Length: 349
Ligand SMILES: Cc1cc2nc3c(=O)[nH]c(=O)nc-3n(C[C@H](O)[C@H](O)[C@H](O)COP(=O)(O)OP(=O)(O)OC[C@H]3O[C@@H](n4cnc5c(N)ncnc54)[C@H](O)[C@@H]3O)c2cc1C
Image (cartoon, rainbow, N blue to C red; front, side):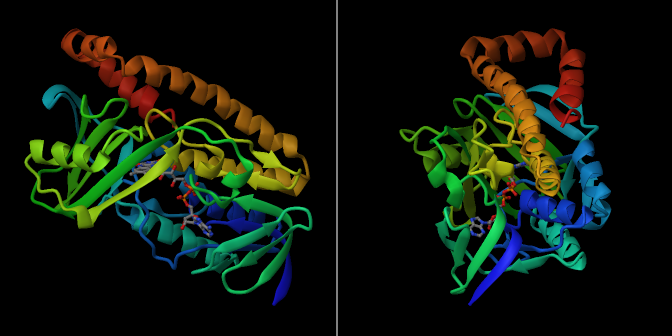
C-alpha cells in the first residue's frame, strides 16, 4: 500500500506529539505519527516535571493533576551517602508511580482527540531521502513533504548525524514502604548522580553517568542499591541513553530532528521533557511558515544553553568541586544552595 502525507513524524513521545499538536493548532492536519509500541507504553524515565513544564503541558489542554502529579517536599542531597543538604522542593513534580506511562498516555490520547493519526506497533524500516518516502514495518510506503524524527536518542535518523557522546541512565521501580522523599546522591558515579524517589508505596531508584564503555554499569547500579540497603533485581532494571550535545536540526531542507533526536536534553540534569515539547513547537512553526530559520534559531539558543551546562558538568564533577560544594558550601551556604537548586536548576526549565 502507498500513501501520501504532508508531515510524517517518527515517534509518539513528548516531542513527536508536541510537533503533531502544534501543527494541528496551526491548521495542518495531514499528519501521521509512527510509533513502534502500543500505548500505554513504559518509557524508561522518572518523569519529573517542573512547574514550567507543567504549564507547558497545560497550555496544550492537558490536565496534569489527572495524571496524578504532586510535589514531594522533602528533597535531600547526599554526597558519598552522607546527607549534606535538605531542600524544600518547590517546583519539581512527580507522578505517584514515579514513571511517565500515565503522562505520555494522556498526551497520546489528547493527540487522538484532536484527530492526529497514530500508527502504533509500527516502525520505520527504510528511508529514501531523495524521493521523499519511507517504508514501514506494516508493509506500507508513505511519501512525505516533511519528515520529523522524534524517535529519541537512538533515532533512525542517526545515520545522517555525527556520533556524539551520551549519558546512560538506568532505573528500577518497585513497591516499598519508604517515606515520601526525593534523595539525590552525588559521588556514586563519575560524572552523574543517583536518585531515590519514594511516594505512595513506590520507590524509583536510578543512576546516571556520562557513558563510558569501560564501566560495568550493572555492577555500579547493583552496588549503589546494596549500599542503600535495597535488593538488586536485574529483571526490573531498565536503561536508556540521553544525548549530550546538539545534533544537526534540519537536513535536506525538509527533514527535522526534535527532542532527544536533536539533543534537546539538558546534559547535566537529564531534563528533556520541556525541551522536547518546545522543540516540537518550533519545528511545527517552521514547517507551517515554511521558514526553517524559526527552528534553527530555537536550536541555536539551546546550543548556547547546553554548552554552558556541558562546561558546568565538567567543572561540577571534578573531585575538588564536589569537595568544595558538599564539604564547605553546604555547611556554610546552605540557603544559597537551596535557592540555586530551586530557582536555577529546577524552575528555569
Ligand atoms: C532513566 C531516565 C530518566 C529520565 N528522567 C527524566 C525526568 O525526570 N524529567 C525529564 O524531563 N526528562 C527525563 N529524562 C529524559 C527524557 O526521558 C527524554 O529527554 C524525553 O523522553 C525525550 O522525549 P522524546 O519525545 O524526544 O523521545 P522519547 O520519549 O524517547 O520518545 C521517542 C518515541 O519514539 C518511539 N520510537 C523509537 N524508535 C522508533 C522507530 N524506529 N519507529 C517508530 N517509533 C520509534 C519510541 O517508542 C518512543 O515512544 C530521563 C531519561 C532517562 C533515560
